[in-house]
Image (cartoon, rainbow, N blue to C red; front, side, top):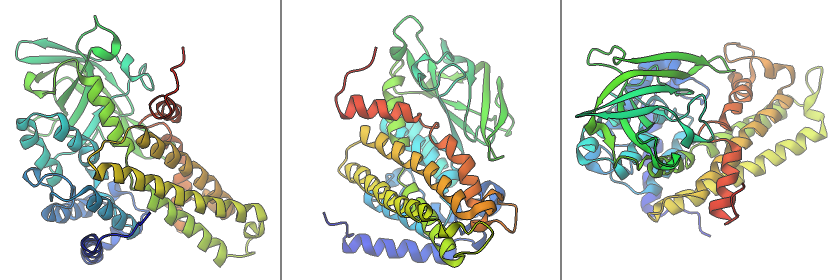
Length: 401
């Protein structure tokens, strides 16, 4: 198989590289900075990308994209990661990576024209209302309701683990619209405002923070109490939400930006061991098992990259990855944990130092990764769910009782 880019793709790769090196603020480079800690610089960087249509190169031009191929989108993601520039998708919430592609597939023309340009401009941040206290892996058991009342829907219920809900302007919500049919058939998709015109919380919505083990505030609880939204905010047809939600999850699990970051972390760990050979009281760099682990992690990052290439090849052919997306998600997110564990061994006691410490190797990236990678195997569907998807959709194995 020939993995080389075409001359046109190579020219685009060089253009992206030169633009990032010239325009990306230095404080955002390095791969270890939390964009939430540098909001003004991140907003300005997003605006520069939006002006070129590079926030979502593969989106149609009429919606603010550049009308490029999926392969060009992949090249952009690769160069962004290789140059350790921040992903614009982070500050857009799920807007660019998930909400936009979902609306392009299923939204009305009015919804596309109303919401997509403002996702790319950075005016609107989105979140995703899926998980509930009693509906995580079994998402179809969700209990949040949306009841039709004339030209409106009235929403009541609760969502949990909602990333960036405290910053979001809109939520892509999955709610139950028909409780009388089997659970998968009574769900619908909605666009829900999270703020009013003045920027205050939308009437009836309460957001409460959830801090993760790494000490960062990304997740939230969201409560809905008689929240009224226009009926035109229904995405697609009523009671067809499960079909669309499955497609949304496939898009989310197709994220191909993590493989390069994994390679960089492993390479940084190898460099640290090389530069500190035999130093320190534990002399961890001389332990044979550590050398074996680093070699294994390096090979695994190559596998992760090949899985990413498979997904982007399917997308470039106009196909929507299914179990292939679950394979990327499962392998990549579990690899994050293995890299973090190996990193803690390689750094020794210094691996416990957080990003705030000036003594922390790799600017505290390994300590953060060690804590944060636990959530990686849960968000977007647990590893057990991914294995079920691969077994049933990919291998044709029967469902369990």
